[in-house]
Length: 509
Image (cartoon, rainbow, N blue to C red; front, side):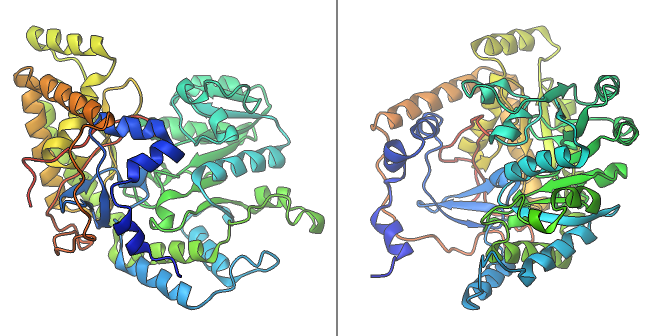
């Protein structure tokens, strides 16, 4: 009997967390129950998620940036359905299929400079692993520099470039020869490069964990120093790339010409995992230098035809719908809409980022009474204030956001690039509501405490009963891909940071 997806979802509805407890990451299940995040999502469309109870959530997390085109974009679905129906000869391996060549051609045309080669893989972390190997091969040097606070992935090589010790603990010695430098510190970079043994500087144009930025002057001088010392400049555009910052690549903001670019996330359209390393012929040919070395670096699923279709359909949709320009315009609209809240609330310090990669910085207020309350909260747990923003944004308004990193009071927004003014206005009004409570009294702390208490009950099996699943709701209220309103969303942190979830009482229907 053929596998029936809809019947399996119907018959086993409500067993999600039990199955994860038993066979998958039981600690993740515990976290999500504790923060009230244990929803049963049944459908995604545009900028929104829908749960089994028919409630809608505005998704400002976008799968950590995967859903640049929103969920279930019709153009991507149509292309993938067509590809499946064509019965393509997939992953022949001893073959040079057409679709990988077409996608590579599309990507290098958008790079500029001397970039003209592509290696396809399955994820951003795998792209970073490849970039490390390519850099060492091309330069015959051992060392890799990375920036403090960086995040490049969690496989062994990528983890060796990770600025967060919390991810490294317990895994023993990682890749040797990897050295951190302060992000944006040109003097520190110059000192390391002078040693003459650095293969590459691998760095995010905007750091994802915190939305930290370096100055334009830093980028110009960093590139010149790398050229002067024959060190490759590798830009990790896994999250910042494909329109996220209002340019197709973030490095375009500073007119840089990197030697290697890594991409992933948004290129998938949210359907088929894909990663890519974009580089120069000189670097690429140092790896694939002879007939005998044609397979010196490879990966089984790297040129998967369905992944290539997802990538090609994504790029075509970017062009057809003017997605990069929309990200730039909507990013500017966010900045304008949020600025009055920075002026109004003492604990809201700054809005930073580019395009639709946005960091909201919170911190101590200036007035004595508020400062006393803020410091008391922070003694409970460092950076708890940002969690107390994320939780009610989910509970009251069904907006999914994330804390940008551990122990920082920064909330990070990664909206779908298709969102529009209605979503922007809804979020800003919701944040205004939560910030007002934070400044008016202790109600927000009590609300946060109630969330944890209810979560503890759910974790012990004493929570609300499951709602019978009758199939995904199709009420016509989802985003149609052009930013139409009608919902609100939840919250989860950046690769390990947590936020919240619960029914909304202020969200529109």
